[in-house]
Length: 426
Image (cartoon, rainbow, N blue to C red):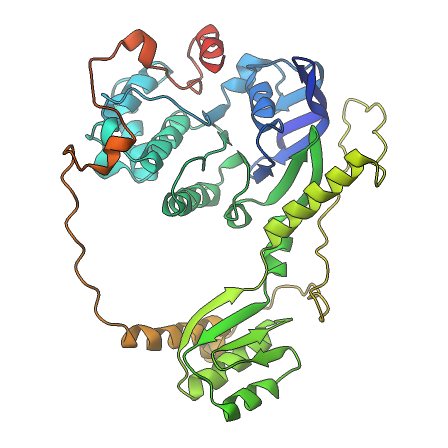
């Protein structure tokens, strides 16, 4: 069953066609990443799915439902810029929102504790939201979206204005939800972490999805690597180069292009046997970035008339399933053929697990850790609330708020007043 079905969707706002004959399928249990530049229509698509905007043409179904109120009750929504009443505590905030839905009493309190634990905020449950970082507030937004256990979670640009470490932590949280079977649609401008979160990734440009790739294909293409080492002797460099033409060396690195599991295991075994310390292992390509750039370049060429756009699809019958957008085929790496697909290797028997690349790499990195000096104790954090509090530049001083003007509840609570939701979105 499909969680999201969009066919021939067109939406025009102020004379501008933001969505144009768009098709999209997201299967139940799938995580789909939709990327594209700012202003291309990602949020417009989300608002149509939630029923905040009505499609000019086309059909939208959420788990088979076309009625906006019914569909909205099946969606947990994390908006791009959620507004929070900073005088609330985290638990108090979630209890208030949960009470507006179909939860109450002991069931509500138990569910609030569950989602706080799920998003990693259990220890901050009694803290004021004014003391939260942006990353913590985004986690709280995910917690409120999960309160009613929605089968579909939609996140609109969840990584906006987050620090790099906060982005990694949020991606890790979403990956854990994905492993629990949560269906997701993640819309964002660009995020390398989507390769590890999503099953499929599409590029939205010129009002429709112009390219699509599976995350598996993108990850498989990123297997060419470079190992950074402390030092290689000339004799050892020669020994490594004798393994394969794909191996190139320098005084402090070994490059494997194209790479495969067997070759990597052989290189790591030689390094381990000769006591060489591996400082790091890095992929040579960023396949998601190349996929995105190629898709946007092709779109610009179609727009300029340099190449022809594909013909518009004919009218579809009721059960029409549109063909998938063109899959991404990465160009060959310079001076070497691109790695061909090989099926996953069978499980490694316990007797030979010690020879696997991951096991060898762990031993090599362990050698490096033994050489590292003991970490120094961290400097004490500045006092919270003082004049040197780093949050002072982010959050204003607390003052007595006007509750009617400053508090905006997220539109994700299924039982909330739809008209109030429309006012919040506007």
